[in-house]
Length: 230
Image (cartoon, rainbow, N blue to C red; front, side):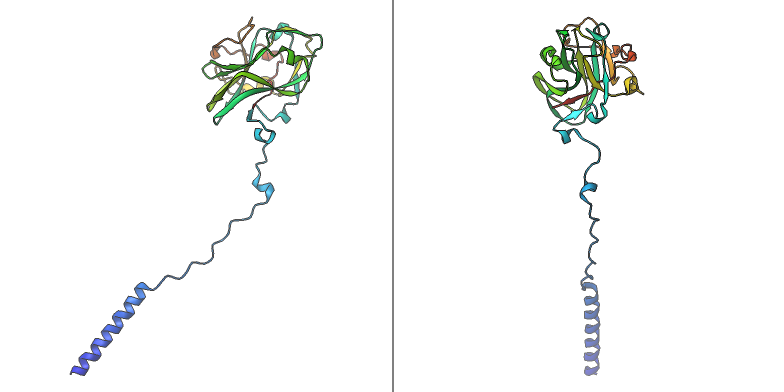
């Protein structure tokens, strides 16, 4: 009788041990992970040109697309403030405005010519000194220093150009897009990408009313200029 109970106990113990071993047995190791596809150098690069590719911080567009040359008479744009919108999507230190100067007029008489930056509220954030002398030399893309650099928060800004004096219409010329007024497709004031405001100005005012953006001068062929930031 005792022998029977002992055999039964051993059988039960053996079964319990087997069940416990089955519950605690380690899972089979996972198979090797599938490595991600290897990208070539060309695939890792963004094919679209970026300002940083040319040691710039931002621009109104790829300068390679600014193949158009635009000109206006002194009577047409003298004293008017021309605005070109630029959108910054990250905090940007701003020290210079780059302008594409395409041609110069050696006989021009220029004075009170400025570049500046207005924010989306129409407040002047920074401006250059009179750039008249620099508009008489070296028809290339070149930087114009702001008298007081600033850090621009993400948002919408407007590069302002003010020209004054006398010049030959087809000699003093700027690099621009060929789109002309098409750059404003889908937009209305105060968010026009390209416009003019005010007349009779000899300096950039502290504020402009962007709801008064006009395209009347632009409609005559004063195409949207190319600008960049550094």
